[in-house]
Amino acid sequence: MPTPHRPRRGLLISFEGGDGAGKTTQISLLQQYLVSERTVDEDLVLVTREPGGTPLGERIRELVLHGDHVEDKAEALLYAADRAHHIASVVRPHLARGGLVLTDRYLDSSIAYQGAGRDLDGDEIAALSLWAVGGIIPDRTILLDLPPEALAERREAGTLDRLEQEGQEFHGQVREKFLELAAAEPERFEVINATLPREEIHRRVLDAIAEDLSRFDPTFEPAPPPSRRDEE
View 1 (cartoon, rainbow, N blue to C red):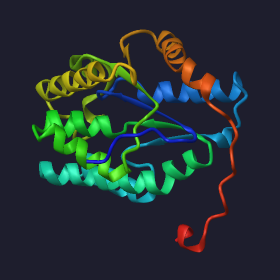
View 2: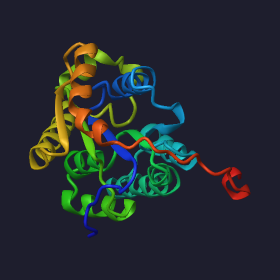
View 3: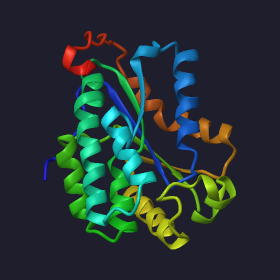
View 4: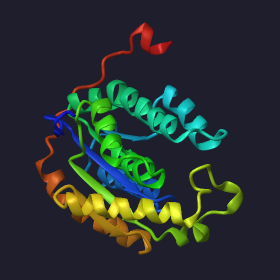
């Protein structure tokens, strides 16, 4: 199992939490703040997600979230495959150029969803994900904590994906695992009550990453032009 390490350049911030917790909203608010209030160049801030941060990831996302039943171990391997490709082709190059990455889910989601929700071995899932990403872990992880029963209040039944349709017991186990992970790494995680007004959540996110942003060196090297292979 590789030793976890943070990137030497750039800044990686992940947003985690149960379904319906508001990760996408808070990432959007943070991106807007960085560009408008901190005058950070738009090209420096990369907003991405797992699965789905690459064309390959979009196909994997369709399979695992909107397709038919996927066997538990196969599901875990598909997420790991998405993550390996996502980090190698999108995230790692952006960090190496000195960029800032905001990702909607990362390896903690696999540990919580497949390791707890699917009742697989959490340590094995963690080792698989760390191997897939070469040991890169976030500088800061924002965990938006939402009780599982709140999902029904936030999403209409007909809009739920395959994982969102799992019962409250499943989502309760996922939530417990997220909180367990946060308790084990308090220096990386910031747990925020996701039932608070979105403006208050945004303020707490800014407070949580203030030190990270103060250390962040905005020196950024533009991406090289895509090769013919990248365009295919």
